[in-house]
Length: 75
Image (cartoon, rainbow, N blue to C red; front, side, top):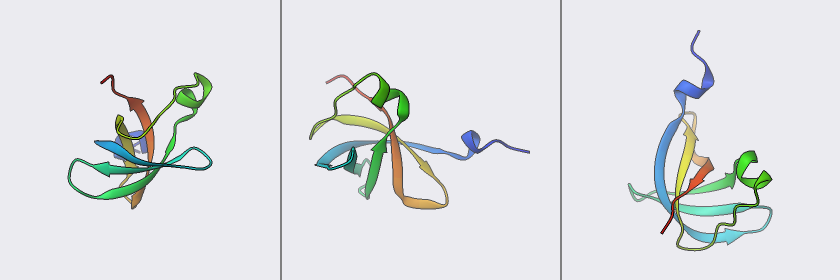
């Protein structure tokens, strides 16, 4: 049986809007715009994300409108 980690889609995008409750609007490299939240490790280490930041997002193949931000790239 395959684990759920293998089924994740990893894409890069740019944060376009910071919303309340650690939610973000992210424009992906393929042009789509999704709603994303921060992973627990990023929240634990107080990594701040602002507009214009390049981020890596994990998405489930079942819901392509939501995702989890796993990494903020250095600009």
